[in-house]
Length: 235
Image 1 (cartoon, rainbow, N blue to C red):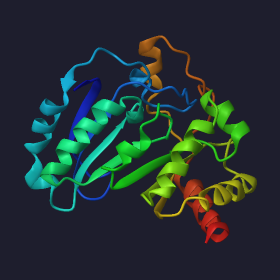
Image 2: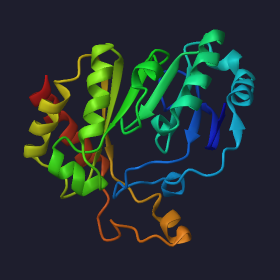
Image 3: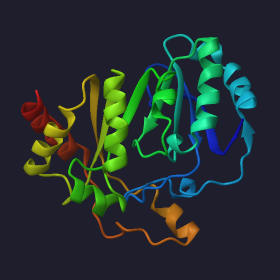
């Protein structure tokens, strides 16, 4: 089985529990206005087999098998389901913990993929359908379909929400987010991430207009304050 990946980060401490290998798969159907990986929007030529990828990851197993594991990110890893399933099957045979960093907007085979996934790191784009469409250019429906299946399988979730000035940094949105997350059964961690422009230079190199060129960044202190306000509503 052959897939298209952008890169592999061998030793990450951010993308799931413990020390992890992170595999960034190409292609994403969303066009989030704050996206910092536009170079992964399109699927490039297939460039690695699942066997070779697993062999590369196994080189670090002494670090990764001790409370760490492998995280598939992107892009959107759900858009390469056959390749993802093949990789996860082989990694599970070795005993790796597998996390999936996703917005839930794939092309199906979710039940088969999630058989091998221990943790879903779910990127909430926007908790309401109208705002979701404005922010990503797509309907929220596919994401909702994925969540419904993952819920039925009682998968563990970590939640990540980017906080953007004048978009979702208000009390009304915090209430909507709380209501949205209460539909997910097994959330063990919620993170608010302050919006930044660290990926904006990639747009210039690719000749793509950056949608939030004039948007101010979110400062961490304000983001932390909003997170504490959110917890009062959610808990």
